[in-house]
Amino acid sequence: MTPENIILEHEKGIATIYVNRPEKLNALNKATIQELHETLKLVEENPDVHVIIITGSGEKAFVAGADIAEFAHFSTEEGAQLAAKGQQILFDFIENMKTPVIAAINGFALGGGLELAMACHFRIASENAKMGLPETSLGVIPGYGGTQRLPQIIGKGRAMEMIMTAGMIDAETAKMYGLVNHVVPQSDLYSAYMTIATRIMKNSPVAIGKAIEAINANYISGINGFDVEIKNFGDCFATEDFKEGTTAFLEKRKAEFKGN
Image (cartoon, rainbow, N blue to C red; front, top):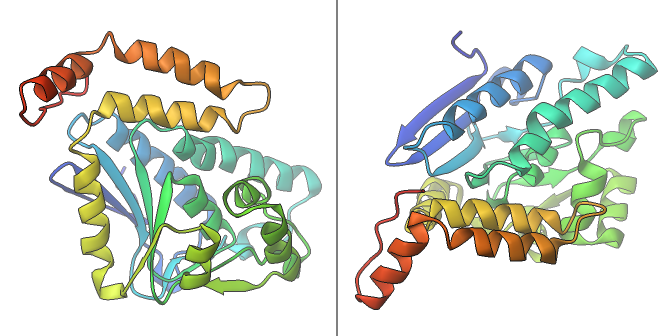
């Protein structure tokens, strides 16, 4: 089935996924979350895709939150199920993907939109971007991992303030907080993420996937991240990419990684 709310483009190993609901400022509803999951699963299974970009259609919004009209009358059980399913099929799914996922924040990233961006492995933003978790102004809390990922990224105190005040921060403040890595003019956002993606693609896909897993392990309760790093480091020695990388280094040439 062709997605109704997603546009997928594939160029030179880089898959760009656009959330495309401009009439709703790209707000997330259940259908869009499902379409994002299916599209991400599809591109990760494609051996020709080495980096994934998630961004929003148009110039106003990355994703301006969840579609409130869809859940305004939910019961306690329905609300919990909404959060649990969304986290499972999209937000946690992205975080644990072996293919690097970059959020290109091209405008408003609020509520579920900021949570989507935070689930990505890192973020870049255009100068007009605004970010926030305004859920407490609606009598609810962030439900797609916002109370967990925001403190991990920017620290507990700043996260507490952002969530309690329900306010927005601009792109430069987000960069100062460490929420985004780079801020560029909106007209340069495409070239900025393509440049970063191209640099990533020069390196071993296997090693990058192992690194993502090891980094994430540090944030999982009951898991020793150092142990995961040691195991994954050792696992790399059995890969063709390791043989190619070390051989290319010794032969003073550029490595040609195959991802195995």
